[in-house]
Image (cartoon, rainbow, N blue to C red; front, side, top):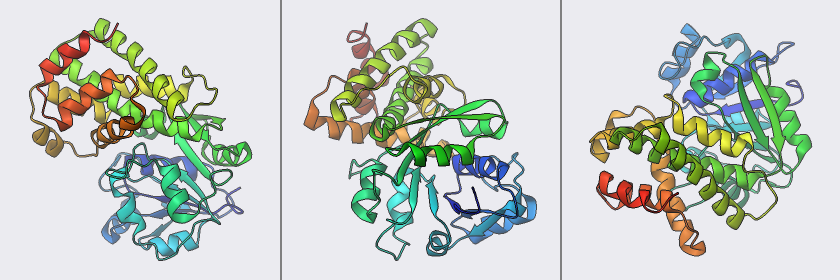
Length: 336
């Protein structure tokens, strides 16, 4: 598989590192996984110590199976499949280094769980409109439920690979699957992308409520309303037949809303505990995609006018300066 399909991971965060670990599990016959890291000193550290210097640094990487790059053009030229795992807010600055005009001969896999701020664009549309990626065959989404930290610990996890061409999805799934990582495939690229965006917003709401002292009883009601809110949104924006109870939707929502590893839940909890938004964002070491996503979803919904009380509450807290306790009390009267 790897000899015919040269795979690159673009990004140096925790999720990119976990994906590299998964891919190297399946590398055989002298083949390697290509890894683009922006900073040369991070490459030098990884090659010397077998670890990412900033993220998941307890994870020992098989560097003999990795070809490192800090030139984006070179890694794209030497790869057939590109897995992007950078924060959504940085994808445009990352791709600005690419001097080519098209990626039409590559399979593009998005492991990005967010939308491009200001543009309010998901990755499928971004790569189609800017780099001629064929969404019918050559674009995939990696969906959860899956935290990088548990992958690093080799705890049993599941991924969903979405692609309109299920044969392409199966190829990517086979490259990732190992004894502790199971995969499934779907053709719903838009639903899985939007669900991955929404679940981060809902996780912030869950964290806010936990920080305010609300218990498991209320959080269960909140998540029950969240999955219905998710269904209303994805069914309106991309109306196809889908089972919202599937792992890529409900499962990813639950793990993000409840897990101690969830950076979005952590951001919400800090706000519920009284941190200012600026202080909370400064203290976090990783990007909470839900911060940007809340505004993107709000702006997209100006067109559709879908009933999104949880998303609206998070938007008001993050972007309108609404008092946290007051906004949640208003939300309590809107959900059942």
